[in-house]
Figure 1 (cartoon, one colour):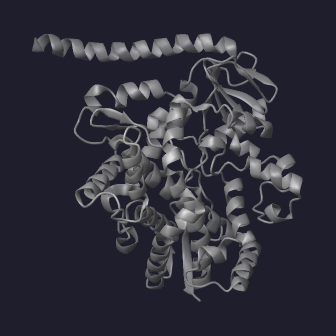
Figure 2 (cartoon, helix red, strand yellow; figure 1 turned 30 degrees about the vertical axis):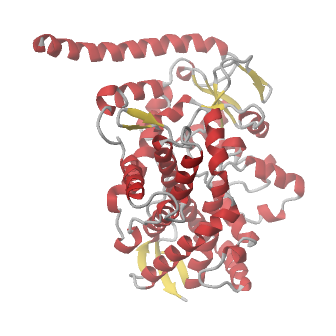
Figure 3 (cartoon, one colour; figure 1 turned 90 degrees about the vertical axis):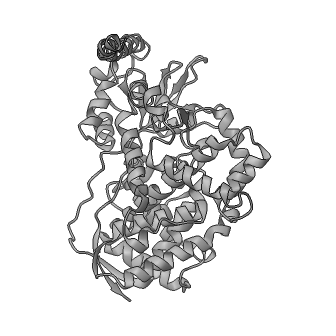
Length: 495
């Protein structure tokens, strides 16, 4: 029996993989006909391996998307059933709130395998009814008013970081410090326990590594979700006793610790809010749901906030005029140390700088995909018919350089455009701003991010004069889903 098994298994696995490839190609040929009227690369019309190959060759989607827009125009096919739009009117359809499109199958690549069960995070959940049920119970924890309860965590971590920087060498890679600050802060907000990143200047517990692995895996396999599931989430891989990712293990450990040490009502953090929701609705908020929420909180809340802060700081350092104007706004506000949310929430130029950094360098590099309902008649987007079951996405990279939306000098960092725009243009700009996505699935934690960013940057600039050690430093796009900034070497001079 063992001999037969040893012969069959090596033969079966390649045959199964071959079968998946053949079935995928046949399906692609059928899909070709439905989207034959939409231009795009020849190979992409028949196989998703066209996109997968580019990702595996470490090409970033920003370059791919801009090239597609230049070659084929505002509506382009980038897979057998994938269509990319760089037209402002498409946003209201793709992210409509009345009959929302579900997230595409590519989000399943980010599912976690825990104890043999696949768990979606809140950000990757595809079932809209389930999303609504979860959101109903926890949305109150993410309002600006509720989040002020966590402001003390932000203040504590800002003070800790500034204190460390005051005693550090004057030349340092501030990008890593900001990443550590963001992880410590979100861990405090999530479960009242930071990882000690800033204190130790290290990725303790491999939390950062786990986040990077998850984003990298998602990026590499999003175009081939079925094949990814077959290889990485089959019953042999996922039947173990724990999670298949470092972030999954961290979430499980923190939940287990909380349950063992008192459970609900013992802390003022997001985990406590999730446990309260579990008491109100135990069916929806089972253990898997809470683990998924913790993964989303850490994964989305740390990396994206850190990347936005680093990008904004980089563009300020390479644009002295903008830096001078921001410093003037901050100094005129006469802020405390650290500043309160109330005092920084109305700093218009600060907000404009953060938004402009996100425009010129979109944080999410890869397409944010939605699926046209498979049981419907299809839909018209930007004047083009898209059949049911198709995957659609917005080309943010091309859209963010459209002069009809942004005015002149779209390749320049000009925060003033957010302040000088008339009402009509500003409306277009806000609709095109997808840094926190939009519609019913817009980022639920965006208020947390804004509080962190608007409090952190003024404090940093009040405490230090900052300059790049290499004035001509260029940022290189990541071969991942998010634009990571890992190297920003500066010289700090206490003020």
